[in-house]
Length: 144
Image 1: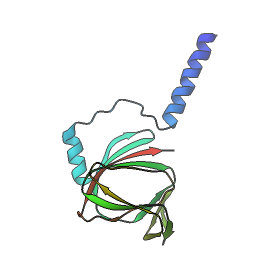
Image 2 (image 1 turned 180 degrees about the vertical axis):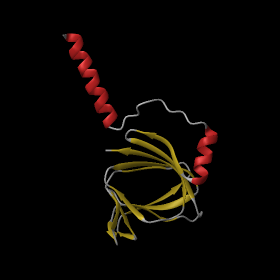
Image 3 (image 1 turned 90 degrees about the vertical axis):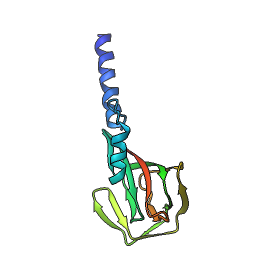
Image 4 (image 1 turned 90 degrees about the horizontal axis):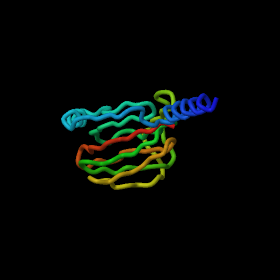
């Protein structure tokens, strides 16, 4: 009976861990593939609740994600990133995804190679200016 209870506990913990965005397996991506993905932008890891992107982009729209938490790791270039504030011209583009043309207020961060910034879900964020034309970064996305 104790063995059955222990097994049930392990199954419950495993199910909770998978639902909470804990990686389900070891994932290794060779640096050549990472470089190729970074050149065009896209996902390098897809796991339940966890997505790692290699991005190269310029400025864009303000974004708000209902359940996605970001960790941005800047590897090349520089950018002005605005976090927080009030959306201007907001529109829902997909379930749990909002875009806007501008933001009033917020906090400005000047990001350069080696910087790391976290952005909790529901926080407006915007690469407002990219003086180097592109900024390359890894986005570690963790779903609530």
